[in-house]
Image 1 (cartoon, rainbow, N blue to C red):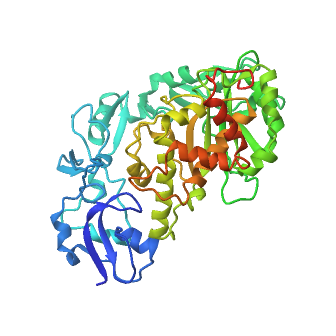
Image 2: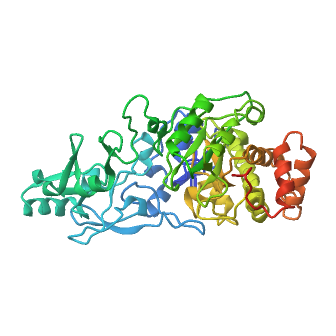
Image 3: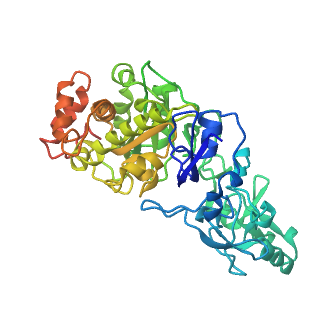
Amino acid sequence: MTYGLTRVGLCPRCNQPEFLFVHSNAETMEFCLRCIQHTLYQIDEPTPTTEDFPFVSTIPQCAGCLKPEYEDENTSRFKLLDAHLIDGTAVRVHKICMLSEGCEDCGNYYAHASNRGYGTYMKMYYNDSTHEPNMFSDWTRIDGEGRCSTCAEEYYESHGGESNFTYCDNCEDTVHNDETSTYRGSRYCTNCVQDNVYDCDECGTEVWSGNDHECDEEDSRSVIHSYGYKPNPIFFGTGTYHMGFELEVEARSASRFEGAQMAQDILGTHAYMKSDASLSDGFEIVTHPHTLEYYQGQFDWSVLNKLKRHGHRSWNTDTCGLHVHVSREAFGATISYDTSPRDILHMQAHQLRFMKLIYDNERQVSRIAGRSSNSYASFSDKGNLVPKVKHGHSRHGHCAAVNVENYNTLEIRVFKGSLRKERILSALEFVTASVEYTRNLKVTGSNTALSWLRFTAYVSNNSVTYPNLALIMSESFTNEQDPTDNDN
């Protein structure tokens, strides 16, 4: 036997509560069986079982996913809670393996097994007390209330049978047929149809809010895609890593559809337009990935002045932001199946230095960004950056100053929107400068490597590479930052 069971903890690869192992044939960190066998080392030998490691049977396991209970000072989400099986049997499960609310009729909270794995590595988790998947209750929302499978059957029977009910794909509720309406041949609950369907002012066609609609080939409204639109990326420029930005724009004395069409005509394949519910009457320009050099030398920035001349604004609003996405390749690469433990630690260390530079200098970053921390770009993760980098823990989810929820990018959300070329380029240069400054930086508890003074000296010494950042830094710390026509 070449496996060694060390302890129970969070696997640093999959971030799940696991029995952690090392393997004698390789210098490894502690990983779960799945990550050792199928992700990192392709070890070809029999999978160990519970009998090989009696310690496993002494640890409480979730009845749903079968993974062990785990709790430390940073997380309690893998503590076991009381729940039930379909026959009423009491079990204990992780919170993520328990249905989110109790049954409206019987009051029980039920477990589910949808997080359970089924590979050969699962031999380690099965024992005589393991419950088969058919012992777990299904969950149905009927007339606005959640019900277990047993109570759902009784509810259907007491209301004329299941055939008298329709499932609404939009709100995921099951409602009586008397409470449904039809939209383009499909039935939805009446509330969803009333809340989401409107008649197009141009052609009278019924349109579901947020969906693309074309009255004819010349209809400019089709250029603004829904918020969830995400085409395959097109990369511009040659370099180690790329960046994209999202610029939110409001229409003040013009049509947002005309503005979006104008921006699309100018930018072509370099960008696309999307709707955003946080805007009053606007759209956002989303660029495909470009290198910094391409943005500085070849990108068509004439779009900004044309939008301003046609009555659009970004800086002088309460709603518009500028978000910069930088590829994780800037920190080494995205973590894949063949990434070594040493490379993972190296990437995480660089990301941590990058984030600490931003979070530890909130006041100064806010000055050059043009706005203070708000609900769309919160600095509340300051002091809690290690679990943010390693496990993705964030108090404000994707609305953090640095959003880590995207697989391929980090999103820096601190900047105020602007239709001034120098401001947008300064944001792109700030992100690049922060990446490069922290790349090989030596940080200790006593030095000032991450101080704003040291960073500004770096930018000043490299002002040829970051000319717009140097300009905005100078303006931001000598002026009161009142919005100007140029910033708008």
